[in-house]
Image (cartoon, rainbow, N blue to C red; front, top):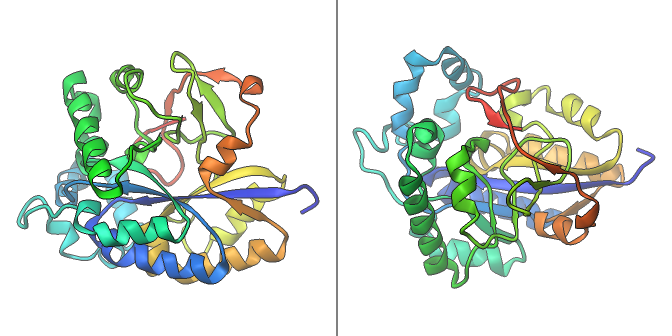
Length: 288
């Protein structure tokens, strides 16, 4: 790679199992590599079992679950949370682990209060529901970390007009809510967006990850890799370690998303509004 390549690691924690098992494994991987990432935490209930209602209604979702070997990825208990089993709280259940993430120099930000219900039913939710969702998530984040979140990464990269209206009332320094080729300013908000431009392992497949990601990184520049605690901290850990070693040998640098934000010339960024599109490997449309 001739041009310098900078990679931000955006690590989403979606489930109780991802927090309990995936996050410690990722901390080991990043610690051994001497790298720092940005952990976007789901704070509240793991209602993953509600996804069962999409299996028959959405063939793309069923194919995605089969293609990613969901039982191995998420575990059978996760598949029952919110239905036959009560929903455990995710990051709120592990305050010591959250403090460990921070103590080891990683960025910690807000991903969700209730990830599943946002992902599955956001278009049907009212503005008041969305505001209450943020209030609960921010309150839980404050309780566990002792500070306010300064960034938000929308679950499953899903946005609606009502979300943008609520975001006007909140004090985030930046957002990471879309899949786009590069940073921009959200029209109507004036807030920088640090999007995920690289595909995640669930989309490329473990065997095709290196080829797909190398092609995207070949042009150099700044990129954000979406990482999931359930995948890269679980069945995809070996592939993730190989990718990090591969890119370090090629001279890539790594940064947190906040470090990327602080390096941006905000006045030179384009001002854009999001739209939605169904990306390859996804079961639901994303904000792009």
